[in-house]
Length: 438
Image 1 (cartoon, helix red, strand yellow):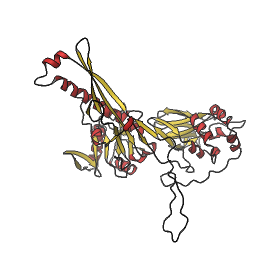
Image 2 (cartoon, rainbow, N blue to C red; image 1 turned 90 degrees about the horizontal axis):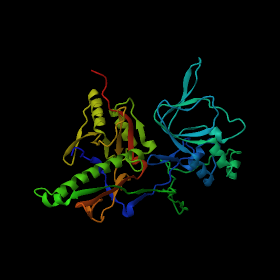
Image 3 (spheres, rainbow, N blue to C red; image 1 turned 60 degrees about the horizontal axis):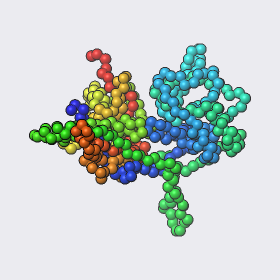
Image 4 (spheres, rainbow, N blue to C red; image 1 turned 90 degrees about the vertical axis):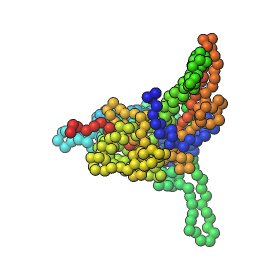
């Protein structure tokens, strides 16, 4: 069976029991109002803006009506653009508020001699079109044409949607007439709501009171399932069970296919897959295209707390090897369970053919910290299932039909969770194609 791979991800992830079929991740509340950038929450491939983060928009600075902010946040819709796509055109009326979730955009306007010129760039957390919130008889026009430089994800809210929400909130109407400044909020260097402490005091001062503020709607990871029905004729089971048990061999290959699907889902599933659950702030691009030692060093600065391993497509690993050879660098190997695997800065690089390669011959490289105690990436399963054959996998006999076919229901239950955002980083747009002819 050629489809069987090394499945390093399944071997390397620490597996945690998800009793009741779900695992809740309670994170500390994280937002940094006042830093000039909007922060988002991702659930798989879906993105939503943190309502309080709308306070970064100047017209909403200082506004603290959570109900109205929640209503505004719910009005934003997600859109994807490819490089070269035009988001807005210069000279057209400003009719929407746009938040840049991920990617890079150029602001193109008139140059000094009548030609087009790039007047600036927009990236993760930036916004434009906030004048839509001010209202007035003249909505104004876009001063620049905004084009996507890379693949871009944005959230946008139309003027009509905003006016509908505005009409339902008297406090928002009053606030937009005043334009107050945003109040300071105590946060730690990671943007988490601060825990007030005291140290180094003498005597008996009054100690500060505090409370660890959590996200209001913590994410719950539910176990996913991959299933199939194995059917074997009783004649095969009766007559051809020596020297090899045919049912056992059929079951073995079926389980191999299920485990391959399991690893593919752990990487690519839009709900819990690692590629889609890498926080937007943890994604970086290569400097020149191919994966260089500089790029992997940059990725190590993203996941710098006890990185466990890199995960990359075999062709991406080969591309990295070519870049190292071109520089006269020869990465060391490390021993992992008797296997010699390449490493960079002592962190092993494991292959996985489940990481996709695009039509343009680009891929991604993941770096992760693992384990519950380390607040890293963990696998989720449930052991103790009825008719359990392997941990998290059950084989149930379903009976014999009128055609003398034995039926077995084979089920694998699994998921993955990223406990804190900085446990997982990704190097995007990794070019794996060979260079020009020698």
